[in-house]
Image (cartoon, rainbow, N blue to C red):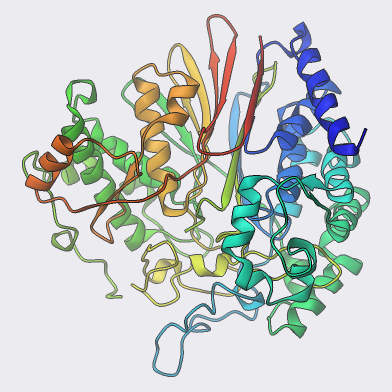
Length: 556
């Protein structure tokens, strides 16, 4: 029996064991079966939700190479049940110390096409390795070497290429083949790998092993750091050893607010998610969502999102570098003022809102997972390398696919990034600064239930989570929340985006009559992972988005 079949068999055994009393009230939802298996195995060994999160994060770095990785970063929203405390672990990438405000502009001040997207110059300093070590040391109960074992095994032995991985490789083939070190791993002799073919990443396994043996120093100093920096510099990048010496995670206070009878805890800056969610939901409190027809609901959600995304562009950036009026933006009074300009019979034009002061996406290529253990410790984590396969560049002999998160800065105030988001000076490039993000890991709590959720999807992440919250308000179960049809508006461009399963013609006509412009895409988006805990019974339900290929598990 080959290693892949053994893994499937072991997963089935763990699932059966996982229904035992020791696991009661635990649940996991991730974007890949091997990541779910890794999380379960940590709980099986007596670990907690935080141990599971380390194992899941590192395994996703191997088996979802187009979405997240050790060359990227993310946000881990944590709830410590014993302390009754939530924190956000910020493992977001940082701009290299040699980065400068206009580094992606030509002599005329125009953005140079693809320079912030392709190749080593587009990569920020990775934060995920540091975050995993910090999480294991401060919240975990098992050794880091144990937590990283599933990911090391998956990289050494290989994992079966799925339809999803194959299609992503196909989409970015032209960029992946530009670098021999990348093509050697993801292109089989220059060809797209077949579904079921084993994708082996021996160099990445060695990097993970160094992290397991030496912790933070295993990645950020010594041979791994030196090889990464050397490879980047030889390919035209600007990383230095000092970048690695200075990188540290940050611990943030999450954004916490109420929406009707619910408490929402969400990611804080440099994630824009919590603030944008709070602003939009504060506006929506003025409407009885349960009594609105579909056209009215879409209308008010779009108007709330339009105003919240407008403020995202104006105000938000790395709080260690810029002063952001967070208290104002999340206040009920501020939302009341914004709501005064909303009319039920007419769409607001984005150009009619106050212009941003300076005239000026993580896509489905991010990943999310949700975890709760039997002691009610919780993790919601969203991880990314930004665009599909990030920069497309792997420094030779490392296996570490680098992010292209530098594109999440405002390259020039008002110039849209790859996801169409605009920004101001608050999110301009500075050495050592974290770029603004849309990743929005979230906890929702009311009197009866707690939900852990999040999703990939670039600029659409926040509206996906918002719609998930509205479903939770209606009493929807985990499957309904992850399956809900989606729409999106982000201030600019001034258009509602619908998934291919758009509303019917009557709803679209009603929106058009109010002045809304919309676009029906030929695809779906997002890959939400949700776990819900029922307080009265102590039972858990978990669900993976049917749009993806993830798996969920619960023990009751």
